[in-house]
Image (cartoon, rainbow, N blue to C red):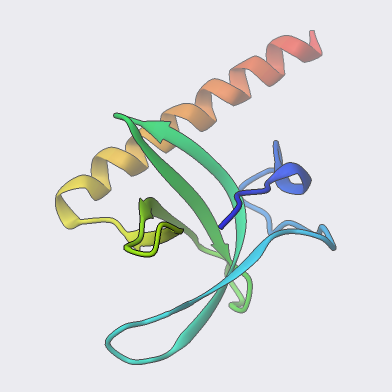
Length: 110
């Protein structure tokens, strides 16, 4: 899987990306078999792991979901849900990165 976020880079993460060529992925819930479609809106590195930030696109209220990028047995990259013990730390790091980016944007405007 390639993580192409050009179209959505720097967008307000509280809004759904309106780009026509945004990268979309479909994930299947292993327990229920239900399919979910997400837009890839960002990615980042934290503690030597890569994470992908997804936004739901088929819900009334878009929701951000962070997943870990993992190497699959066939050599491809895939996405995996975060373990409970890492979830809070990873979401906090992403919040910190977003706040840092906002400060940089404000500095650029001045």
